[in-house]
Length: 452
Image (cartoon, rainbow, N blue to C red; front, top):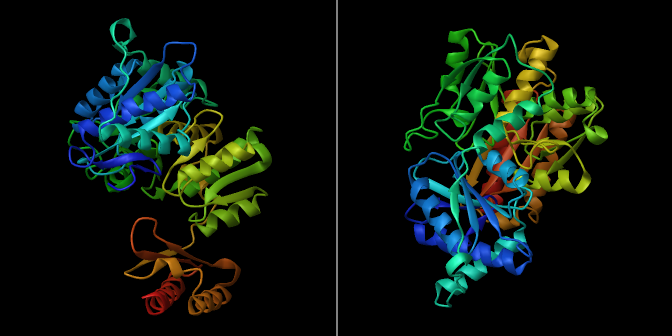
């Protein structure tokens, strides 16, 4: 698998890349690293462990729990819950460590392990590096120091986690959802019970699809990566809106009453205005990535809000928010972080807050999302090129300058080397789709000739 930890934990094909042995070893390593860092000092350590419904999560959970308990960590097993629920419970229960088993929006054969530090925050990069190093050291033969007798960890199911998390979601809502009909697509994933319960308790009439996980059907033709079923269901049931999650429910995309997609940029725009109105948008600032649609940037400027843009990835959005004290950030893909109420993207919370804005204003989701106009966006992947030369090629720089001059203030060009493949992504936005397509193709041809 190369370096084990990526931008979102350890991920791979379950029982091929991500084995029970690896899950157990990483868990033991995490316990030892945190102990050496002083996290457990003066008390008996505790960890919260949750998972999504994937079949492989059953044996991987057993491996993680065994590893932690063998290292002297007491384990609260919360079962199938969303990633943000595990993060929240790690914080409110005062646990020293949280572990979530999920591969998010990936297909069923994949799985992953994500660690949370005390408070429910993402584990620092240096701790992940240390865990990986310690795991490798002991995998090759160095024996672990193991507690015995009363020193071993105790394991118990924490069934209260479901109600604790749902109660938190309801408590932070600005208003109830009475009178709204909402269709929820749960992607046969981790929010299949949580999300419908939260929306119902908040007063909405709820219709669910994709809410019958069997361990094999997660993300299969449904959820935030496949919106067609949700679009049809919203129209069929005459609902006010639809909400779609991914497998671990840290994402939220929406559909308006006419079946039109409302993406993460539009959701951010709606929530930004709602939070400013409530006096909760600190610094009148929203954090998003460079891939956000230009229409979002123009809308924020028109509304007098500041937009801070980061590299692609919700981890970079969160870093900027925490460093500068901002309250709202997210990605076009639907990772939305409301930092006053969550330490990570929370799809159920985002959906609830979006629905609450519809209920509070009496406006349709389409009207609210109309605060921004999505400009046509063309993305072309150019494979088999030397992506390291994107910033140094004179020919490419000249072509980009010419494209930017042609597009003017109503267009944008972004060239981004892939982080995982030998290709360069060419993204062009323009007021006219044909112009965007033509400019993108010209730039892609230059990338191929200049870097090929």
